[in-house]
Amino acid sequence: MENDQEKKGTKDIKDFLKFDPFRLVKILIQAKRPLVDATAVNTTRFVLLKVLKSTGLPIETGSTRKTQV
Image (spheres, rainbow, N blue to C red):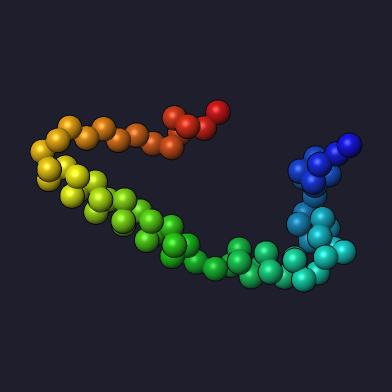
């Protein structure tokens, strides 16, 4: 039995959700929204790093790439 990801494949989202117009509109509106939240997360992360470094304790950081398979 195919899951949604396998059914979608490389179809355009408009084709994939043509029978669910409410969901399609919701996704398209969200996709056009600016990434303000991502900026806030990055700003918070850098401020937190600065505060932690000010403690004088050893700090190790890394990218999320290490957690991706």
